[in-house]
Length: 44
Image 1: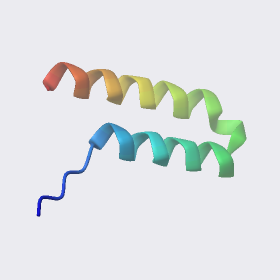
Image 2: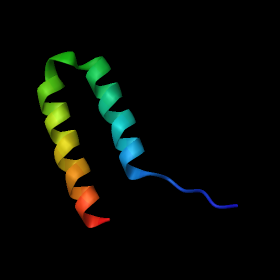
Image 3: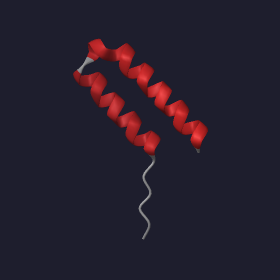
């Protein structure tokens, strides 16, 4: 049995939860998400 975790999936859920609890931080959360997602995409 193999357990595979997608980093991008976890990152998306974390960003969504942060936006729910801190809507005033939306711009910063989205910007950080896009930067991290892009860097991870280039690495893989």
